[in-house]
Image (cartoon, rainbow, N blue to C red; front, side, top):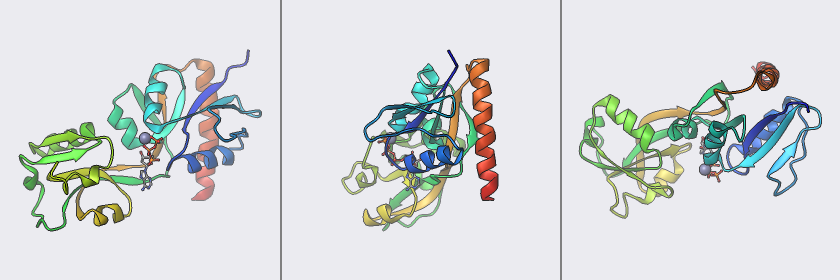
Length: 213
Ligand code: ATP
Ligand code: ZN
């Protein structure tokens, strides 16, 4: 049987549309009917899996998928044995520290012995360690931005794109700790045949990117 590469893509969310668009611009056709979890390409040796973005690094690490498209924020936070093969330039966002608007911000030292709520405990603790700040990290999985107003934390660390969510929760962005964009990830254990298919895919992706610049 002919080898195929399995590509994991976010099923629905901020990465989905641009991921599908990139695949299409690479000339790879497949049918992604609504609700489908899996789809074969009929003109490229690839099979697509549609998953929640948080699950993609784990599936790639376990070999369920060979490669995947996720935000660098998710791939770094999960700490699975995957690596970035190529940066894709879309879904750009930043991970930032934010404090209540009424707080006068005087610098990072302010976070000493404070409680910070976040869904990114690993990236945050690495950053705080580098900066020599000791703070308590409260991991929460969603609606991080309401934590200060309900008394759960003094500050938050969350994804920011426009800042309007922060503003409507009475918060202001004070430090950017990580910049992210969509990346193509892979495990370290691809067969030679799959590596060859990945190289072909990368060649096409780079051509698409070069045409845009
Ligand atoms: P899922 O249901 O698959 O778990 P999700 O709600 O966790 O989805 P999305 O909100 O769709 O995730 O975000 C997916 C990724 O898109 C994020 O991990 C981040 O890399 C990027 N992203 C998040 N917010 C923005 C934004 N406002 N603008 C651009 N990219 C963003
Ligand atoms: Zn998610």
